[in-house]
Amino acid sequence: MLLFTDNALSSDEAVEVITHPSTDVSYLSKNLLRSVFSMRLRTWQDGVPIRVFVLPDDAPLHSIFAKKKLNVFPYQLRSAWDRLVYSGTGQAPLVVHSEEEMREKIATTPGSIGYLNENKIDGSVQVVHINE
Amino acid sequence: MNSKKLFTRSLSSIAGLCLALITCPGFADEHSGVQILKQLQVHGFLSQGYIKTTGNNFSGHSNNSGSLDFREIGLTASLRPLPGLQLAGQLLHRRAGKGSEGGIHIDFGFLDYNFINTPTIELGIRLGRMKNPFGFYNDTRDVPFTRPSVLLPQSIYFDRTRNLALASDGAQLYGESRTNWGNITVQLEAAFPQVDDKDTEVSVFGHTTPVSGDLKSRPSYIGRILYELPDGRLRLAISSAQLNVGYNPGQNDIFESGSFRFSPLILSAQYNAEHWSITSEYALRYSRRHGFGNPRLDQSVTGESLYLQGIYRFLPGWEAVLRYDILFANRKDRSGKKFAATSGHPAHGQYARDFTAGLRWNITPSIMLSTEYHRVNGTAWLSPLDNPDISSTEKNWNLFAAQISYRF
Image 1: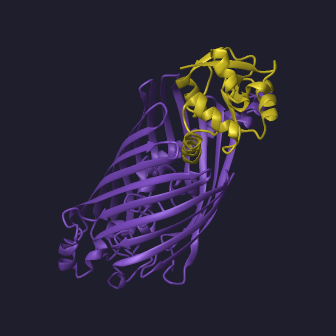
Image 2 (image 1 turned 45 degrees about the vertical axis):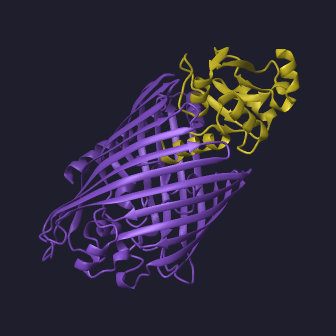
Image 3 (image 1 turned 90 degrees about the vertical axis):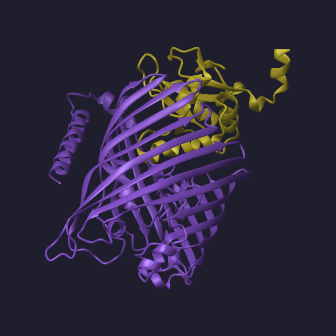
């Protein structure tokens, strides 16, 4: 049944959270993931700085990721980042312009985290499972 | 003043020391130097507005002919040499009528040290010039992309006398608790407000005649508590402050020494759904003048502000905004009649009811076009600098605004 549901989703919607292969995490809670993508949490547990990568605000995969994995809307993320950047209290995530660039950055940047369509994922990055 | 100078000096020493540590070749080898540069972020924005009004002036000579005298340009940089240490600054150029005549100002510039940052708790300190944490919008009020409309609700974020409440120089303790029930963020600050400009003189003396003495920034206190659900659907905030300003008379001054205190209390609430958001903020604004050897000034007053705003995202990239915004200069004289009877000035200068309808188009994530129409009853948030003859202002007036903005 679970398999069937997964297949019933269009391939566009099968988004997965990915990290640099050296990052010591195999699962994250939804709240922790939100802290990471809202740029509040700055380091992994081992002290390595977190590097957040995202697609542009209007990319369909960005919207799917925000809604499905974070349970927030893309405009909420944008407002949160703008509040941090333009008040000086935080930094913005790094924007990549394609899924290929996303995979390459995540594969080569220690501490990185991002997301990809399931069918674009290969062994160069690590998939992280998200708990409710 | 001396204590402020001392404070500013020690602050710049701290910042200098940090920069020295970062750039010192003995401290950082070549590789970590590259790592540090990777942590440098530069952002900016640039916008040009057009404002046309009937009856009164807003942001320059906007009456009838329309005014292009509304421009905002900002450059923001942040550097995070260590995960817990951040340096951030923003330069701002703002033209908007006689209250903001351009030039380049340090909007903020501070050092931020994070003592603790775990998944559940964060604690830190900021030293330098910070934007005052007031309500939902003050921290980023000059960045067009962060505003729901071209002009922020003027009852709370008045551009009329904006500088006193804009930013302060001092120290801020901040903390955040993150749980499954939501996040609570607290900011507490002791600081010196910025008082050396024309519009603060207007807030203190209530008129535009230049005074011969000097306003002095005095120790002030600012705080905000913000609660939001983990998914950010609901956001609630309480902000409060006590901003203190002193006055040292000049030679042959008509005023004696005096003090001015501004204590706003702001309650904020917001609900965010996928296609719409509702925001409301209510403020009580207490101000007290003491001394000055002038009974007209030596008194206190509490003003009141409220707005209700709805945003509807009807197509990808498009937003419509509707807002009703009310300001009373004195909550015990909402009609302004008592004021008119004693001062001879029009009663409509004591209140403003603003109905706004606007449209915003995010052409790309970095280019935005926004436009709006205001129907206003009352002139309480009009700048006396742009409207020097109070008695000739119109009670009912219209404002049209359009703005194009770019950011990177």
